[in-house]
Length: 171
Picture (cartoon, rainbow, N blue to C red):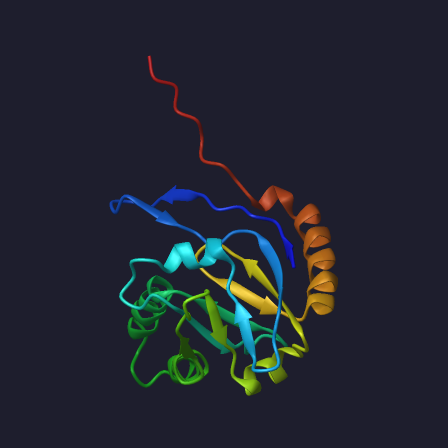
């Protein structure tokens, strides 16, 4: 498997430090649908109410989205702030909470990926985990390479959109 290990902690306002999902890792999927979750990703969810990962088919493309309990709690808070009868709220509830599966980790750090999820993402023998801070994606490796190339080009064209806060100089 191809691994680029990287994990860091970043401060979260008022709550100390939180680990984030970082790096890109491609792992094999065995005949039973078992897939090793990167060790750095497992570290992120360690100590949460559910020490596994939540995964669901993306409504934005042929890949899977996921995260830990902290992400699900954030999504719940965001969605519950919407009007209870808002069509967008109902669509988000169905597409995220209705589609998500909590996937527990076995003693070796593997999950069993539902076949419907593997089919949605076109996963056949390998899967690429892509860390995105508070969440991650799982891609078909070839499809991800195409997406990553396009994303780098887009980021380059829009690099000025990423702004740093002004530096405060203390006397």
